[in-house]
Length: 204
Figure 1 (cartoon, rainbow, N blue to C red):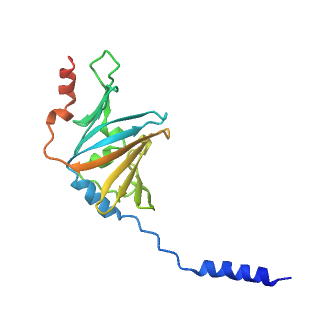
Figure 2: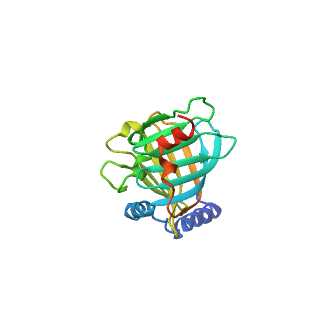
Figure 3: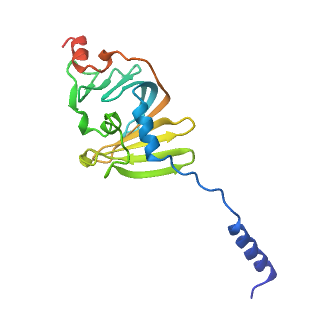
């Protein structure tokens, strides 16, 4: 039997469902995100890197599009990661060798945002595009080289800023780079992105 108490409770629940809810914010359009990334010719930021094993490190990121990137790690980490000349070089500060581990830039998802012309809406590239709170999150992969993993980009608006990226390798391991104070800068020295110069500097 439907008592007065249950009737009132049911009516209240129904009324609650009828209350208008705020509309969810729409994610920033891909065209605007692409335009923003293309506008980042030279920039720098502090970063915090969270590796797939849970370890963390900090440092300064230098960006010079197209094709150039540098991660200077804070002590006690002595590693250095550079992208330039179509290659990525990882200098191991714990190794006695001056020669870095190198591989083609095209084999890392970061090549997507370091390209000459970023187009996040390119056919086969977009894997996800959503809004979480005030963040727009885009997941992309190189449609020509999906085996090398994916890249998750996190943006906020007003002003539009790249806040974070996550490199997801072919085995699903995630390396997160959170950016703080990303801002355009003037010209950056070419030596920041010259792998041969860095090898020579280390005695190679």
